[in-house]
Image 1 (cartoon, rainbow, N blue to C red):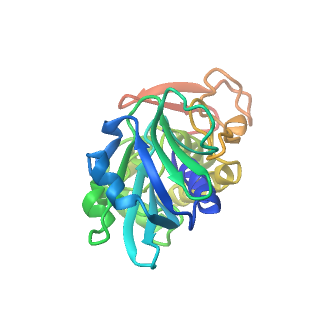
Image 2 (image 1 turned 120 degrees about the vertical axis):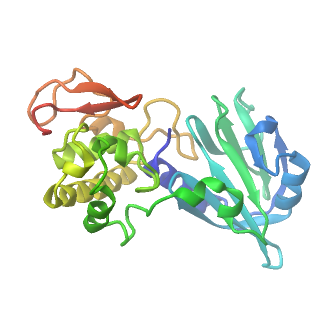
Length: 282
């Protein structure tokens, strides 16, 4: 699933190419892609003849702010890519791939396509008289963004003090911190020297401060690399992210640690894989 760096890369790309172009029409090729409204005619009634003024990101969600031609607010276009979703900026004359689910036709002969092989992703139109979280209910449970001031070592200490969950599982909890998934939890734990199995409540202030900094460092590095592509993720031009080539531990089971040459191990925690170096992480 695309995580914060991948979604942030898509957001930046969308802000470069889609803003202030009218949505002239659209086509829904798989109706269940629409979460709200769930009828294509109602979805397009809210979007056609509006234009995007800004794309924002909240956790792994994308929110495109809409306006009418007179500048009046027209709500939001919400997108969650889930496991295999892609937003691609293409020429409308390009062949439509099998897994294209929604097509947005914009002014001046441009098209934004939503591609999704596994069909878990969802799109929303949020009317202008509603807050995004009232329609996209997953937004309600999100914790702070990693780069927000509210996300700090002190915050982590307070939230984890009584938790007996493994620290890896805690980092995947979107109510603790928004946007981190399997890839960057593994990478941040490596950089902070923490094993994924360490209990959250047994992680002291010094190590939590190291973890906090590691989270910021690995997310910054991945954003600069355009995210990670191991399978389906692409930016809006269809280009792979480059972080995977320099990952410390994620998806490197059996390969030598980049620091100490010890083979990277993989275990299961609550049904999710966790990669770590048994020598560098304690």
